Amino acid sequence: MSNDHHGLACTLVQCDLRWEAPQENCSRIEALLGDLNGDKTDLIILPEMFATGFTMNSREMAQASDQSDVIQWMQAQARARQCVITGSVAVQEEGQYFNRMVWATPDGALVFYDKRHLFRMAGEHERYAMGDERVVVTLKGFRILLSVCYDLRFPVWLRQQSSDEQPFEYDLLLCVANWPAPRAHPWRTLLQARAIENLSYVIGVNRVGEDAKGNQYSGDSMLVDFKGVPLCDHPAGTAFIQTCQLSKAALNGFREQFPAWQDADRFLVF
Image (tube, rainbow, N blue to C red; front, side, top):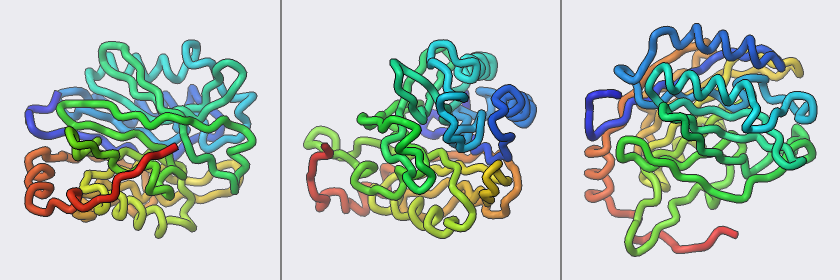
């Protein structure tokens, strides 16, 4: 993977999505990625529900996780490109439906995070079940908290859960989204706020284009540093791929120089 032993190369994929067309979306994304591989990146980040768009047709579109063509495609891409690939898909499990963020590694392993906060304004809470577990994964020494779209509005769910042994639970907050253009300002503001309050990098990857319900998406995908400053910022509303570098040394240095975490409030999330 990328050469910097103290850094993490993350590739943000801001793309248009074809409505409820998993095979076509996977093919389009694969073509968009070209020859991108572990020599150039450690992690490829796709939007929320990248295979279908933000569909509420969970009964028709969701597949069992262990039989999902889309998840198998993700595994194949991770293996072929020798880097991690992540994004969310609609899945069915034991009679329930989840908006599930999938973390697929080159060795075939899968980690799942089920979206906690379901977007009631679109009826998502009636079509999908709520996740109940925060998930932190590790890549190249970076601990990464997974989240999906509407989760971003709920700072308690995404707050660093510190302990005496470990003041920082994560180093990067990852949020994949289908966040409509009329609410682009909250999206951009919340990405920066989450970074500032958690002394953490934040990456938000959102789609562009228009869905079957007429919702417009401007993208505004960003990598935000631990001061809340956008390092990679694409508000233009066009498809793009960009690989950005995260520095563990810079993150650790700022946390030492500005130890606001020492004054944080301890709490439990139920």
